[in-house]
Image 1 (tube, rainbow over the protein chains, first blue to last red):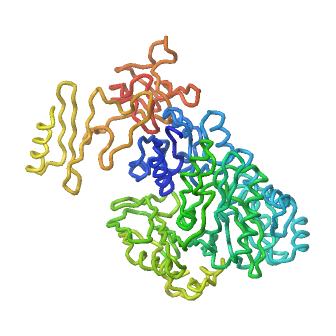
Image 2 (cartoon, each protein chain N blue to C red):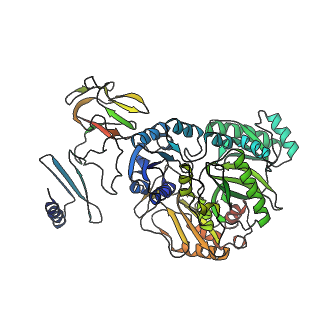
Image 3 (cartoon, rainbow over the protein chains, first blue to last red):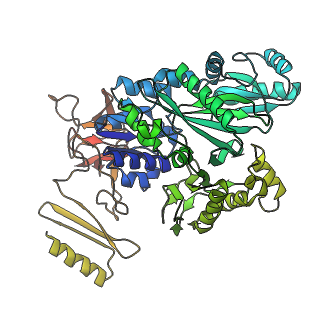
Amino acid sequence: MFKKVLIANRGEIALRIIRACKELGVKTLAVYSEADVDSLHVQLADEAICIGPAASADSYLKIDRIISAAEIGDVDAIHPGYGFLAENAHFAEICASCNIKFIGPSVSAIRAMGDKNVARATARKAGVPVTPGSDGIVETEQEALKVAKKIGYPVMIKAVAGGGGRGMRPAHNDVSLVQGFHGARMEAEKAFGNGGVYVEKLIENPHHIEFQIMADEHGTIVHLGERDCSIQRRNQKIVEECPSPLLTESLRKRMGQASIKLAQEVAYQGAGTLEFLVDDTGNFYFMEMNTRIQVEHTVTEEVYGCDLVKEQIRVATGMPLSPSIRNAKARYHAIECRINAEDPFNNFQPSPGKIGLYYAPGGRGVRIDSHAYSGYSVPPHYDSMIAKVITIGSTRGNAINRMSRALSEYLIAGIKTTIPFQQAIMRNRDFLHGKYNTGFVESIISSRAAEFRR
Amino acid sequence: MDIKEIKALIDLMKKNDLSVFKMEKEGFKITLKRNEFGGIVSSHSAPAFPAFAAPAAQPAPQAAAPASAEEPKEKQKEITSPMVGTFYRSPSPESAPYIEVGHEVTEETVVCIIEAMKMMNEIKAEIKGVISELLVENGTAVQFGQPLFKLK
């Protein structure tokens, strides 16, 4: 087992990783920006090193400072969490050259899946269905128009280097296609340093269903079922559940096998997630693979009775997959609601600031993953998620009921949060019947426009 | 100073509603601050406890207290570290240090080396003044923003 691990992240996931390390007897080194000096992950780590001012580009994305901190801290491994440098092949490469284990897949697997275009080609090779689209990067607007004509409108123009729901433009006709093509390329160049785009069929209001896989360094790969993440606002997930109310056992089996096949194709190691779009007739299409632990890994953990972060650390030391992972069976139902420091009654405007009284819900079947505490100042420089509420129930109905109960107890004074919006979702009739897709949140907002002003 | 004396000081602070107490004697320095909820949070620094135990990294800072005693009234000029690495006072182990106390520096004066990822980086003062205090020992690890020198 590693002696010491550096956590190259912040917020709730840094806390999650520190907890896993503590339980494994591994010492922890937190790196933090000046804005995060009072953060919970800094307090709970064994050691902490400041790596820069508030801006992520000058701190959490500063590879040289993080590696310096790893060297003076004499760590064996770095856990990158999610976001930031988690899927940065260059960073993984530098770790390797400095003899520091990067807790995640190999550099080549990150590169293969990080380029959305290469990922699609790899999926095709593995016999996994992909959304109809261009065979590679589309260089000219003429080419884009040709592809769109072939696959039929509506289409989506997507950045090859994009992710997290960014760098995407829909197009319903030739005019919007040309506009979107040039716009997406410019945006992608600015945001990701890579202006390459491809064109894909736009499946209207699909279901977003992703599969969790875990692989050791000896070629054993298993899948741990799916998560339904269709409830999104502006391509950002806000509610996730496991299992999906949509999936039949046979579809689950087929999608699970496809996930393992794709992971085998790139000799994957560690935790990974394969994202699929599923239409209403049960057709599934590979969209992209996330070569890291995900925010919503929690619902899989609760249903399959496992610790995915600990397993990430274990397989990174070369251990074979744990029996708890290999023999995992789904039991019960779990839901996660992300709580953001945003005002749902004011167009979800960010609401950073000092938390006054903070009281988190508890009781049977309630799990809180959060770095918030009474008196904590939510900084304005990073993403707005401050907590994840996860509830487990013997049935989906019980899990929802429990979530409503937990949300009603949750007290976060001093800032605005999306708790009321989550409560509205939990009471929504379509959600209760498991009938929703990626158009769900927009429909709630427009039907309750008076409350949740657009 | 033993625990009994410190406890007596704390009681004295509470009784007289003092919020900050500082004392220096025989190379031992102590600062006691009362936080807004009335509890006492303390930070102490003595020559035997540097901010980093060389070459290991900084221990986690305490929740409500600064990791090192601060001067609330005087606004001292400082040179802080612009990177994470190991601090060296001279260009090489055999050479003389770049600067000493009393040395006058301009913005362009090289004041120290910080080694990061096997590269030696010359750190410039970036401010004008006279060095009044050396805050970090040669060969110790430093973090971003850590004060290295005090200036007058």
